[in-house]
Amino acid sequence: MRIAVLGANGAVGARIVDKLRGRGHEVVRVGRNPDSNDVVVDLVRSGGEAYREAVDGMDVVVNASGIEDPALAKDAGATRFVDISATPRYLETIMAAPAAGGVLTCVGLAPGLSTIMATALAADSTDGVDIGLMLGAGEPHGRGSVEWTVGLLGTTFTDYASGVRIRNLARSRVLEGPHGSRKRYVRTNFPDHLAIDVDGPHVANYLTLSSGPATLALRFAALVPSLGRPMLRKVHPRGSDEWSVLVRNRNTGRWLYTSGHNQSEATATITVAAIEAAQGRIDPVLLSCDVLDTNALHAHWGIMIRAGR
Image (cartoon, rainbow, N blue to C red; front, side, top):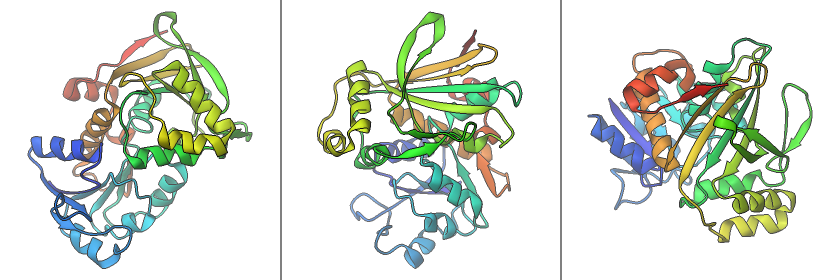
């Protein structure tokens, strides 16, 4: 496939480029820096016609730039638009009015891997599913990732099952993982529910960091955003680069669990896996759970997902 990558020099974008090229795809890097891109387009200032020309004739365009502009999806035209974003409102917008080439979303760790696991675990529509995502506190992140987290501070979202307004990153809960392990998480609005039918199981998302003190600092930042915003932008916490995804069915007690190191690498793997699995599909809107399952991830991509209760 011929694939354009926006944000091809970022933490995730560079890995997506390497994986796609390693699997034989023709990749065109699109961005504003002429020294590190194949096609120069300032996606913020120019966009429009220059962007449309850059992606014209491509099979896929991957947005790993962190720029959440619905016009990028619309202007992709007949080229499938793939976005690694985890922002619910933005994803809802591009899914509501896909261009001719269609959109493929929920292709990261959460939503993405977490969505695939939740779909596999939910037995019926009465089930409640808790998703616990742990990110590596010590892994360096690009500006876009930091600003995404900063953007959550002080915001609220509606729990679509109860209708209650919840403050992002402020409500704490301990989730039990494999073999009785326990870890404290904070409630977060990851958009896994977009992949679940409105009459399907209730999904609740939680976030923690690989460092306990870093998780406490994140919760403090959410409770006091005026102090939390500069803190998150300036302070890089200590810790490992380990990540994990825990999905637990509240009704049956069954769980699925997987982990690894370097979340940027894992996000790139899920993105490339979804792109290849979606090849030939003509659906206007696709999500990772529409084209991938836990068996495929294990067999073809080496992602081991453990199960138990």
